[in-house]
Structure formats: structure tokens, C-alpha cells
Image 1 (cartoon, rainbow, N blue to C red):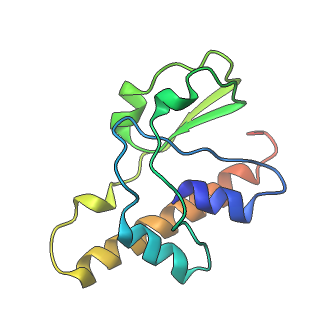
Image 2 (tube, helix red, strand yellow):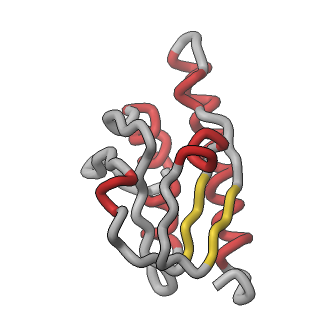
Image 3 (cartoon, one colour):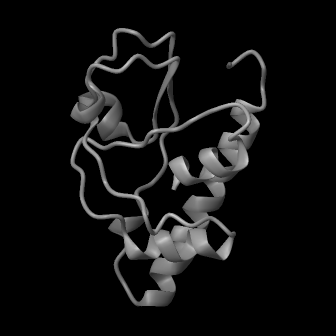
Length: 123
């Protein structure tokens, strides 16, 4: 979700590449709640951080505690930022409960991205 938010709302400043330590298919609930705010991530694919091991990044951001601890070091990165968010895919229950959790986390991520990356000091 973060990649879609950055690449849609802050495309004039940033390009985001999302990857995980344990990539899986993009969650259909994530696709659905992002579509609700006009961001299409249906074409996204889950990528491993190891696909980007040789890349040089200005900023490396981790959004879950597990990734912070297991993410490889990117030697070219100028800055590392960590902001932990709950994994919405861990919610059990009916579709309504799952969608509610995905919306909550989507909105938290969106607010954090806007507040953090509109700050010139971060960039």
C-alpha cells in the first residue's frame, strides 16, 4: 500500500519500490481498499528485498518490525527510517472486519507518508 501511496501522491518528489522479507501475492483486501481512494495497485507484485540488494537508495524505509530486524543493509542509502504499522493481513474474521482493518492501516500509512515526506528535512 505504501508504494502505491507514494508513487501516486508524491510522484513529483519520490519513487517508491516496495519489497518484503517474505514476499507473497498482493493481498486482495489491500487492492480493494486502495481502489477506494483511487489508487490502483492491482498490477503490483510482491517483490523480495533481495531483488534490490545492489540498488542505491537515498532512503530505505521499513514499515514493520520484522522487516526492520531482517532487512538487508543497503550500503548506498543515505538514510534509514523505520515506522512500524500493524500487519492488516493478520486480522481474522469476516470480510467486514478485514476491510475495516485494511482501511485503518491504509489511512495510517497515508497520513504518515504525507506528514513525513512533505518535510524537507527528511528528504
